[in-house]
Image 1 (cartoon, rainbow, N blue to C red):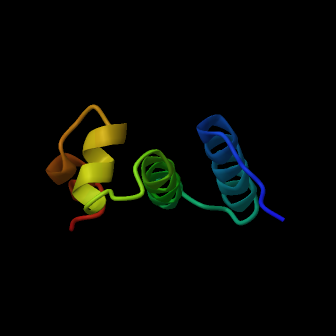
Image 2: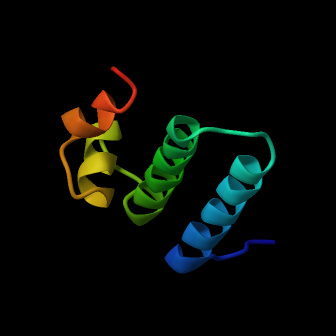
Length: 75
């Protein structure tokens, strides 16, 4: 049996799952931001399964550069 999900469905459940994780343990902003980065990468991959890398996902989902986003974690 095959189930089809819309992009809105994928985004909703990914964010819902992130909220469960963030709301469980006492995570700080830095960890919450990292979980949101994962959610945004999931949404980007759902939009374009051929997405090249994390930089492409950041460029698609954030209004800042990949370098700026990486600086949030000293990468």
